[in-house]
Image (cartoon, rainbow, N blue to C red; front, side, top):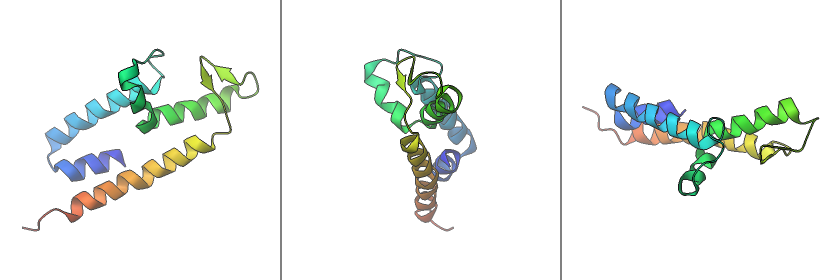
Length: 106
């Protein structure tokens, strides 16, 4: 969905690939899987990151029976993460739709 939104917005392969790479790398770094101590000024990006939500769901599935907190990440029911991922699926595709709608036909 994110790739569709970026590609539909930019409509240029090189620019879309570059922006997608930078965006996904930022999401991975801010998501908490690779970097545990994320600086405060970019910590808000984690809530937009699909990596963060899938990481929390992975922790829930693997370690729910052992402990309620892993490395400072609270393991809860997982409904928030599932809702966020579903919102991203539809939201990114809706952004792609809006980008394609504003395109001028030639």
